[in-house]
Length: 406
Image (cartoon, rainbow, N blue to C red):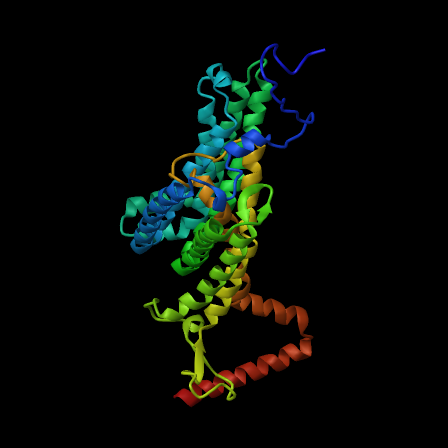
């Protein structure tokens, strides 16, 4: 029977784990930052590093927003590349890669094929409009748009054949694992980014508002957890606290509703941005300075987005925390001091981008009607006699308008 002590030495407790358990041992949990921020001795040093990085990120983000749509889209592409790089490295094994020269380039082949497919579909018409002054480029881009899907398909098939030809004996499991992992990364990265780019071209506002709400929620959660966090929120993310979660939710909701009323938008406002005035109740005391308040319709929509950003979107961070614990890592990367990798900063943004697009299309974009749609409804839902009556009344209305204007 094996003993737990060495003769003549002090006894050391052995770390026991259940077979097959995914639970992270306590020693690794401490290394990954298992202590609450409020009890962390080095919290002020880490706060300064984090604040310094945040200032640079927010400043760079503001500059790119100022530069316009295409620069924001380029920023999204760069973020995607860094995210893919961090996730590709996660399951890569250097020993196996030594026996598979060039195999890791296959991941990037699939990545850029997916990028061409997604962004070619989104930007095709806009791309033609930007090069109409040059006939050669116009023809080139026009041909690309016409054969866009078949081009992407054959690029994917080329990668598929490359993968099959690269299979090696005793390496099948690793290679098929990498193949599946690559496709999962493409789904995660490009699903959210396609919605993000769609939001950009619906108007920078609809990209900026959801993204800024996530940033505000993240900063507020860190501050409230830093100074007041005492009650752990979820085991997947040991440093998250109820105090930080609730404080960040309140701060995000207030910011979503109040920030839009400060008049920072300088443009020809649409109906969503034109204020509506509401009279306050008469029972308010005379010293109260306002008798009515103005609220823009977009503020109610911002409130809904803020509610999602503060309650639902953080679960993207919890998912990422569980994912990292499953792989026994603290961060996805180290490209941002104090924050980790790009993926660590984009976990909640991915969830928010999809919701923002769906919300915008469902509750904000007006329903567009075409003549074909109206004709289909008339032919399918009205009997022949009512169609004749509609025809006569429509002709009479057109004649009256024509002679009335003349």
